[in-house]
Image (cartoon, rainbow, N blue to C red; front, side, top):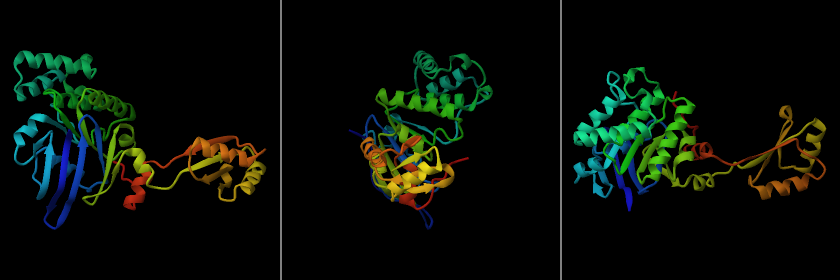
Length: 308
């Protein structure tokens, strides 16, 4: 079963086309990452799939329900965490969760039980009875994620969930996302952090100017672009010169005493390369494969825009 399916989704605001025939398929129980720069249409796609706005044309189904014909069924099956943390700073963490349980029509007993479970699951017990305004940004985001899970959704939309977090908090959120998927939840993630998609996503789609320009697993996308190389660093200029004579295709970086040799960055290729060097021994060797940054730059013609 697919958790999300779209066919030919379009959306425009006046003359500005935001989505231009978007086709997506997201298998259930996976992490799907929708990548793209600011203005690519990522948030618009999420808003359509979560029934916040309507597409101009096309079809979309979430958790088996049509987003136009069965919006209430879609809302019952999903949760949405937006770009900005949606918690009440005057309430405690426990009160925020209890409020969400009331809004999702859980009984008082079930709401208390679910609140306790989520506080423990997201490691919030120590601060649970303190006002959220006193919490760190990472803790607030964890609470925000916990609140989306009060009603045990089948599909969770995470719209740039780690923007503004420090590296430690980002990695904590990543671990929580992995745990959710192991529990059978489908995660639909939009992000500008390419490392995030690489770390988390089973499949990635790259959106640019409202159009899907590539999709596949992270490894499949990396194979679309050149850029693999082996970097060799040497202990002396003489060793660098000797190696450069043996490797005419390499590019030298004189100040770093390094050679960059284009080709596949694999153990087999490395062994062959070292055999060609013979008695010239590098002081340091590193393999470099294309990453999602290379994919993004190649397919969109511009570097990724990292949020500040």
